[in-house]
Image (tube, rainbow, N blue to C red; front, side, top):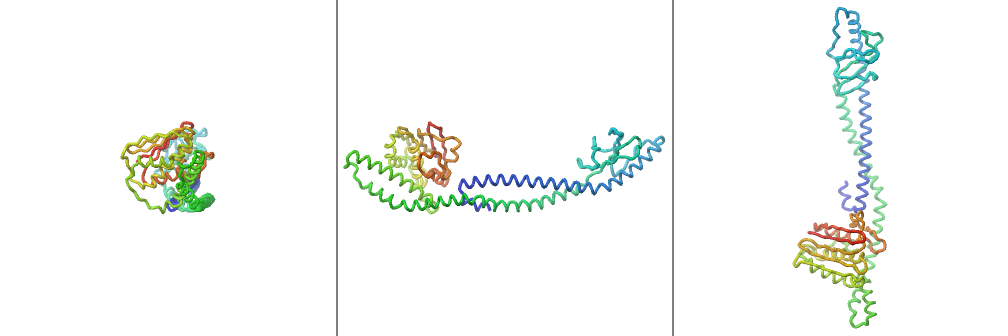
Amino acid sequence: MLKSWDINLRESEKKTLLSFLALYLFLMFVILLFVGVLYYVSQKEVMLQSKRMELSDLTNEHIAKLKELHVTFYKNKNYPRDERFNSAIYDSSLKQIFSTTKAKKINLYEDSYLEDGKIYFIKELESYYLGARYIAIEVDDAGIWKKKVYQDLAIYGSIVFMLLLLFGYFLLNILLQPMRNALALLDRFIKDTTHELSTPVNAIMSNIEMIDIDSLDEKLQKKIKRINIGARTVANLYQDLTYLMLSHKIVSHDEDVDVGLLVKERVEYFSLFLESKKIEFNIKAQEHITVHIDRKKFAKVVDNILSNAIKYNSVGGKIDVEVSSNVLSIEDTGRGIEQKNIKRMFERYSRFDPSVGGFGIGLSIVSMITKEYGLHVEIKSTVGVGTKVSISW
């Protein structure tokens, strides 16, 4: 049941699902435990009630023997015993006179009770035989009733558990429906937005590429560069939205990708962004470091991390990129992120700084691609100092 849900659940839905299941299962366990204890106690009381008549008869037989011993005590001083039960007598101050019971202490305030596999029956004597005011009878509990109770609890408990689980399933569907409707509405909006962006983005990018920047005066060059930066920003957003909506239809073409060369290509693409924020960029890459992956997908991973490093960096900041034997790290001197939010950075639509634009899908795409290829992503960040993202393979 739950496995079929997992395919379509997003991280936010999974968290809601797990939280609800944990609470629901805990409440189910408490309710079943409470009902089970009540049932056990009631069945024990039923058993004691059924035993009272039998124990009362045994007690009366023993009282008759005590009466006889009381009369003939000067001749016979042996306390009467019976193989069917053990017994004890107490005086009016509850002090033990004599006992053959296994228990060291008997609760004389109860008329009957069960303890340590023994059933005790207590009766107050009408006449003081041998100075006794109370008599207690001890017999073994066969435990047949207990086995039946456990059997009933196992059978009926399982049935009730399944019914409650089924009820929880429908309740959870009702609980998740508003969230699913909201996310479906957002997905539909993104699909429509992506469709509408396609033509104008391609037109803007094509026309900018055809402009001979060097032939223009300095002021016009700056304007064209700003237009180019805006167009590339929209183009990146368009590509992310397209990948997000169509990732399940994209066919991968895996190959050995030179990480250093790819990073340098992507940095060149973002050169206008770096120049506009006066960000110092340093790259330290070992040669011929490769990873077997789809080139476009890996480029998208690098693009989204670089884009965030630029977007959340300060003017005049710095970005350091290092490529070693099995690690690509990108470190910026930006505003950083609080530790409590780091784990949530890969959730779709998660944004922690409303002053910066975007849908909050870039790192979600990074997570999707790295999980697909078994890459490990680690984020270290300090507020006001910067963030370092490392990808290892």
